[in-house]
Image 1 (cartoon, one colour):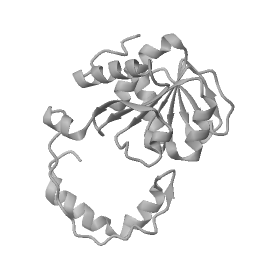
Image 2: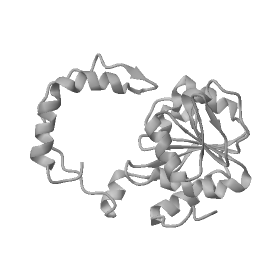
Image 3: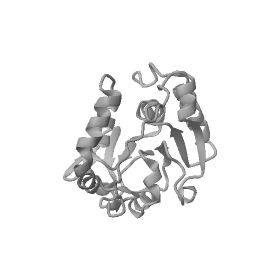
Length: 220
């Protein structure tokens, strides 16, 4: 498996075992892990086990997620825009895959899987109906997700990560700004980033002031 399993934390190893065991009873399952607990790193270990059954497709919807995954996986191919570079592990854009024919993959792993209720994701997964599918998400409470996936293989939440010392405790600070998000455009179930940026621009000085005051000496 070329070191895919090395350096995992105990909960990540448990997640790998639970996902592999879950595929014995389900074809489509979800792995729930809180933000910052290493979903992509855990996915890499799962991929290492699945490669013996055939090539693996990792699906994402934003450029930064695609490149982050390719960096984590190492020698990974890419399906995006005009690029079709298929390798044993290939990272693909959902926006491109929905326009392409079905390729020869044995396993499909979907990042940010709470988006799978969107038509584009459903169309991609329908093309890979014979594959084992894993959805990765920190937020599994999206309406209709149960129509796409059969069960949750493993769940590692924010409280678990904080209690076990892997994430810092949350300290909330309120910045009293009256921001109207009603006009922000939504795409694939999420706020559209450019629209968010336009809405927030007038408030950035106050936000920056608060960050400097409360977290000027911390990583943010």
